[in-house]
Image 1 (cartoon, helix red, strand yellow):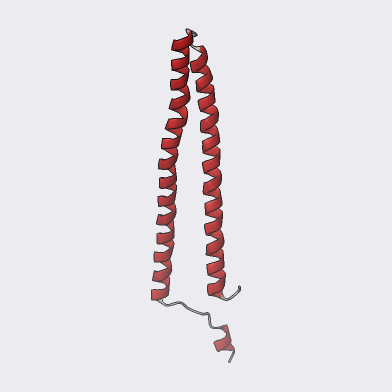
Image 2 (tube, rainbow, N blue to C red):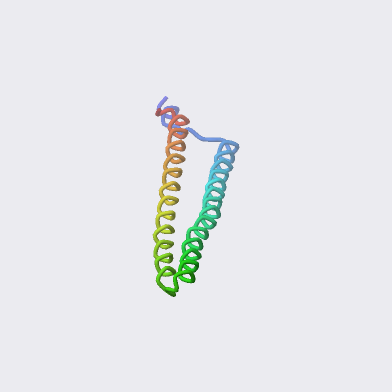
Amino acid sequence: MTKAAAKAKTTTSAESGLEQIIDSSAANMAKSQVLASLLTMSWRLAVAILIPIFIGLKLDSHFGTKPSYVLAGFMLAIALASYMIYVEYREIQADQAAQDMKLVKKTSKKKGTA
């Protein structure tokens, strides 16, 4: 009787194979989400940097103040880009936390501790 109670629960190779597929699928999904957000952010950053500098060039040529408005546009571009990076970072962190919570809930339900 004590041997039956002490016997460890084993998983079949099919269950472990399925867990590996799910883990690799989740990793691939996370990589694709990060890549998509980076591509989107690159276009936003390009626009946020180029537009203030372009406006600064136009204002400098109109008013004859060569570096003033370009430098002001450059400073504005740096501020906008920094803010956009911060917002994107916070969104990625929130998405990752939500995915981690889902994973914890799934594993706790699977183990029967929920």
